[in-house]
Image 1 (cartoon, rainbow, N blue to C red):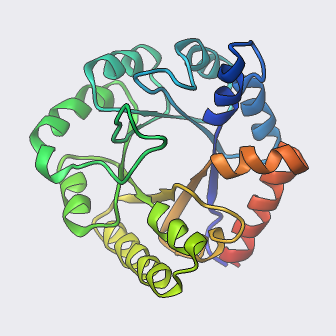
Image 2: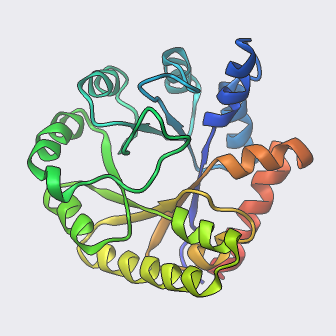
Length: 247
C-alpha cells in the first residue's frame, strides 16, 4: 500500500455563501474546525485581492484557531506577501489571479517570471513558510519552479475534470496521462507534488492513485456536496475514495 495521501480542504466557498448576504454566517472558520474533526489533514484558504470570499479577519482566526496546517493561497503581490509574513502560515501557495475570473484559470506562469518570483519567495522561506507553486502539468513550468527553490508544486487538475464533465473521454485520458507523467517528473527533481482544482467523487480516484502525490486540495465540490450530505460525511467519503485509490 502506498503512503497515505493528505487531504487539504479549501473552505473559501463557505465564505462565498456568507458574503452573498453580507452576514456573519456561515462561518468559514467553523467549517475549517469541522473539516479538521472529519479527517482533513490541512485547511486551504485563498485571500483574493478583491476579498470576494475569504477576508483578512478569516485568515487571522484560522491562524489562531487551527491545529492542522494552514495552506495560504495568494497572488504574488506585495500586499499578499506582507500579510503572509505577518501571519507566517505553514504553507504559502502562489496562484495566478485575475479580477474577472470566476475561479483560478490555469497555473502560474513561472518560467517567464522566474527572476521576480525567486526574489518574491525568498522572504517567505526565510520566515519558515513552505512555498508551493500552483502550475499546469507542464515541464518548463515545473523546471522553473524547481530552479527558483519552491518546495512544492501543485498540479492544476481543472482541465482533466472539465474534460470528464464534458464527456470528452479521449481528451480526459490524455490530460490524466500528462498529469501522471508530470507528477513523476516533478518528483524526480525532488519537489513535493500536490494536485487540485475541480476534483469530485467521479474524478479523484485516478489522480489519487499517482504514487508521487502527497496531497490533494479540494474545496468547491465538498462545500457543494455538504448541502446534501453534510460536511463531515462529504469529507469522510472523499477520504475513503482517496484511501481506496492508494491501496
